[in-house]
Image (tube, rainbow, N blue to C red; front, side):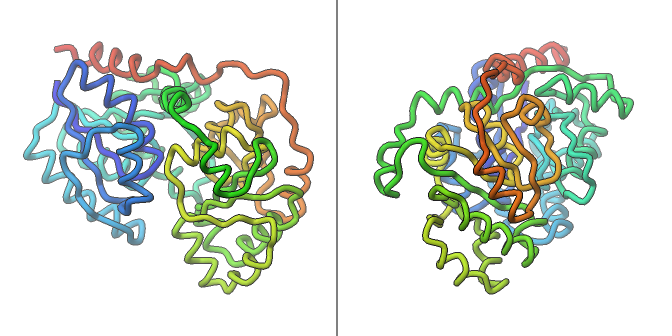
Length: 357
């Protein structure tokens, strides 16, 4: 079979790594990079560290408003699919790249395979929620990471082509965990295992709001351990735009660093006392490593992490963040709710079963 896989953002590179390895062992995969994340830190280094094949096509779309970015991708992907004539198009998660790839394929009558289908935050103010809902409703094969995702699709009337395969992020985490050594990063930053927090903040709802971003900085400055804050380019820019640079630099316990490579991030997360984040995927990665998480959002797609006590939802209220970080505990129970670490093999099996002819 000829499968076109379309990626464009850091989380998708991680998910694509195990799936590409499994696909290419048996089929022809053509990898397309939209260019949504386009610099070395946000893109290139991930392909190197995860041993992902270099993209066959890079559309180099770059940044832009949601409509403009998605529209540009849509036209370019359509042209490419008309040329390549694949048997199916595979997309990941909930980004503008996912929406553009899924929509272009569906309009051309090409089956759409959605990895990480069925996730819901039930917050339509999130662009990611719009993307994932739309792609689920046009997908032909919906590959779900959890039983809850299957239930969400059924509640929306989607039952055909739905398969529970487990979470490919667990595949990637187990693969990279055997290959990382956090000691150089810890030594460079002057940190000790279990005596710091790792923080990431990138969502528009947080970083675009002067009030909320200030609350986050103030909260991090009050946490009783060092906070290694990997600054997303959007957040770093908004710190200056909102006049908050001096506030950040005055916080003695905040160690602000540029975007980290995947292995550096994984090493820091694996050895942290806890994670402070508004990311979706990192909540789950923290769970994989047995690290408790404080999520700077009011909702999460990964409800299992909350139900099991590994994750607390606190929004961006300053006092709530500080209190949650202070009271973090490591639950005794850590079940395998995201599969067995072989989701990529299950995905290839489901693709073959559905499109065998």
